[in-house]
Length: 188
View 1 (spheres, rainbow, N blue to C red):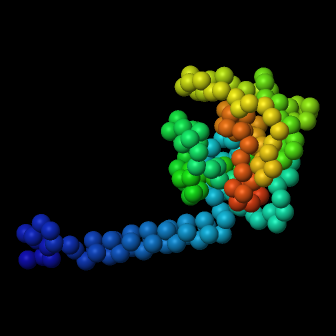
View 2: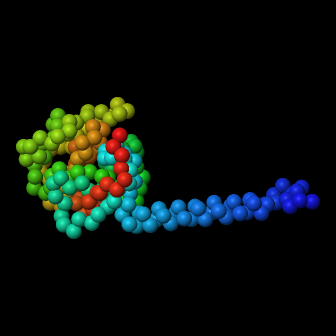
View 3: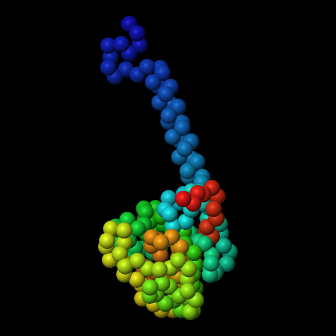
């Protein structure tokens, strides 16, 4: 009688070897992912910035205008609604969402005017026109204009469908993980 013949649950030597190889490959992939995340590497799968592999680089200074940053949004009712609407993905931030990649457009003390587009201290921000509705036709109200409070940053993405401070307002600068640096990306 051949090995496993007549016994429906018997495992052949080849099946055991295949299972061991698959298990080792899964373990190696898991270790690679953990190492990459610990090293500050992140995958961007949203069109707000080029798609692909990015790295979080420590800034060693306060955020400045035009910095491209990774930031964890706070756990607020507005962010929970944004996640429920599909604007934010699940991820590793304390709020349960993935870090955002955005450009700092204004810092504490700067005045942000939000109307048909955004101005910062009277200077028009390029590619900042507002949408009144999201891609599913739901209302997308703008955040009220005002001065960025101490300890906060106003964020922007030039991508037309980006969900940024035009809609959710300034975020705490304490949520900044570091500067965003492209590693291997593709801009569709």
